[in-house]
Amino acid sequence: MPKNKASIKVVKKIGFEYEGLGRKYLKINSMWEDHAHYALLNG
Image 1 (cartoon, rainbow, N blue to C red):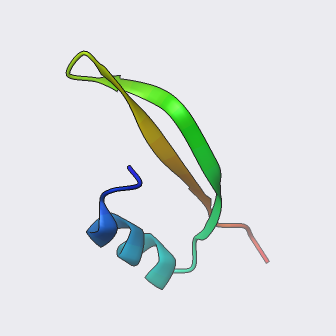
Image 2 (image 1 turned 180 degrees about the vertical axis):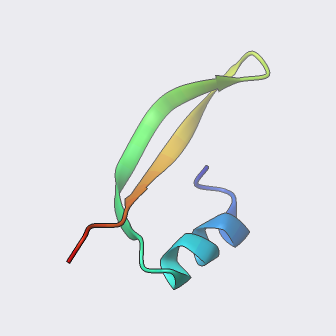
């Protein structure tokens, strides 16, 4: 989730790159939440 700064820091530290934002992507506790998409590609 975009507001989870600690998780974002971890994935960036291990090499994942931000790919985009899924608006209202997941329904959590009856509310639609945005989702940040990150990917790690084989080099």
